[in-house]
Length: 91
Image (tube, rainbow, N blue to C red; front, side, top):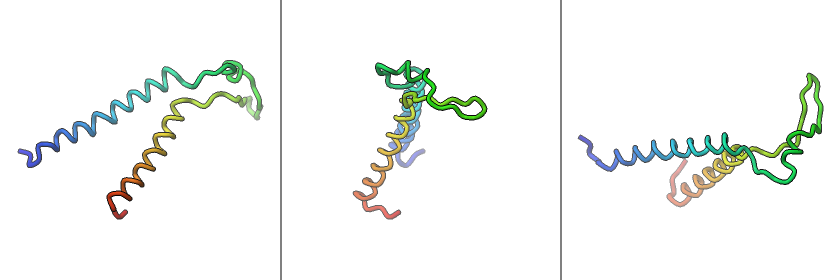
C-alpha cells in the first residue's frame, strides 16, 4: 500500500519522458545528420587538411544531433540555476 498514490504516476512520467526524448534524439541522429545547404555535398568531399597516416580533414557541416545535445545541456544548466534561485535551495 502506497501512502502517496500520486508517487506511482510521477515515477511513470519520470521514466517515460526521458525514454521518449532519447528515442526522438536517436531518430534525428540517424535520419537527418546535419542541416543541408547549397554547398553541403561539396564541403563533405573536399579535403582541406592532410595529416600523417592518411588522415584527411574536411570542413563538413556540424551534426544536428551534437547541436541538439549541446543546446539541451546548456538549457538544462540554465534552468537548473534559475530553479534553484527561485526556490531558494542551498546547494
